Image (cartoon, rainbow over all chains, first blue to last red; front, side, top):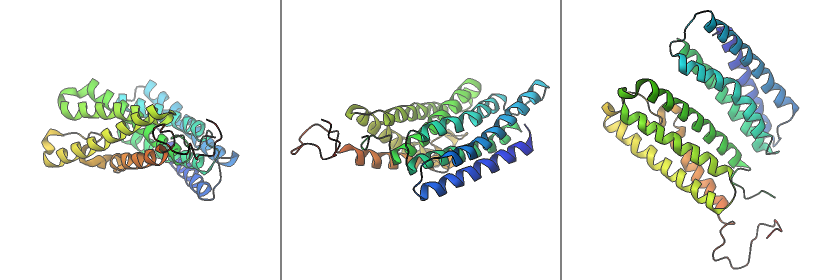
Length: 117
Length: 148
């Protein structure tokens, strides 16, 4: 996996998550701004998947390959699913849902780095 | 409209966290059982059991109706009992749990969320319980939904 992209995706996820918390506290539902913030994080995560797959195809091996692949999948499905679930409740609680998804992504990427080795 | 649904309002966040734990616990126990089952059978079987409980709780919390409400309560109660029992057992006899399971040490590997989650779940289910219950109501519903 690519360290720089991991750090960037964690930063993007934490910023998006913090923005979601702020909007939830202001009693705002998920809007275009929060979706865009999550979208930026998702793009970095997708770049990470491309990079990691290229490295695996090139013969590099993760310390725990199966777990690494599961975390890799989890890292890119979490935000789309979180966004979908958050849009089902057009209130501050939807923003809270997206915040949880963003923070979960940050944790997933940290774990991704740990199982890579 | 959907004010008493367990998956609206704060319940929406609750379902999110339960879903994350369902996916995490399922994946983790699948990997553990597939690759290193003999390493710690008891811990891994308990992880698998925890995974099932999380899946049931997630599904039940997203479904309307009194029956699913009871299923959700049962799942959360099972989860709370499981975390407390496994947590205590893993502290008293750590040799039985050489590898971290979801519920060992009261979920310390998961920011103690496993022990807080069922308490929040049961509290939320208690708040959303009063209205769907068809038995023994005197004056009909007070939800203001206007649908009977």
